[in-house]
Image (cartoon, rainbow, N blue to C red; front, side, top):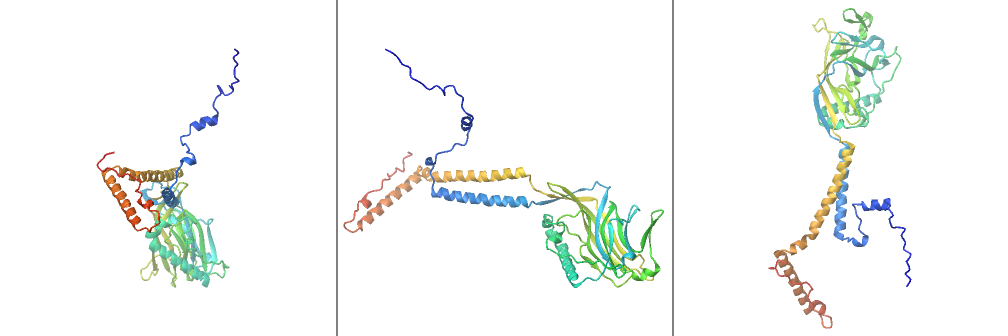
Length: 412
């Protein structure tokens, strides 16, 4: 007898599994076929409510991330060197050739920064439209200063522009430049860099002259004393870099007098402020100001120098303002935990609630309730069959339900 050997395909014997097969075996998220899944209306309703709740919570988390809280802290100012930037924009009711602005600090040094300061001839009286714009700006500034304790927390977080007036779209009064020979006022605008010590910035009549031994004086011609009028309008006055939402006490302030020899003194206390967020640190200054003005009358014993004085001092503490925004990676991790936690919790709750009737029926009380319900259904079917007209099939109602009455005293 001849034994023949069948042709057996041995091409796959000893072959190594492919990469896709190895990856498939590593899948810890097995997928069930669609025919093995059972969908119910209650499950769909729970799914809609769950995803609605997750979406609402995610939106609230995004709003909280985009609008972080502001924290305040205080620390000792250890920096005693460096320069402080002073931003000034003021209109004085005196010709530009007759007034000058300079700085004298407590160390005795003086500064007259002519390069960064512009003296622009203008008219002190505003046009009707410019006056209306300044009045509106003045009203907004006074309102902000009166309510700053309540709204400052919100203003620090405002990020559209470097001036708080951009929030309300406040127009700027048009200070027109005129011919020096015909102008009755001077607009002094620019930036000063002063030492980080106390001092005073003053606008006086005449030109400054510095001498030996920290001598500082202003030369005033006798013929020009009748032109002295220090009525002024402060468009802007601040220290340090401009920061979003910062309120300046001397913003849109106007002081007018008809008396030539009047001294205006603003006592200013600067508070170093550090604004910190994840991207950069801005160092600026907040300040408080008090105005004191008086008429110079040597015959009446009121001595002094007519002019505008900003007497400033620096507070030894630093206010640190921090935007308490978490890192982006931490934020997305929290979002994933929130969505996954709610989804898993709802799934467990639904599983418990769906199996709760079966669990209750296994108890003695549950079996008693089920038996009562079966008996009631049989009684209802019997009564309905008695009222049916002749000729109808009553077997539907007379047939007892298929449920078996459970023994309430049994444990199985």
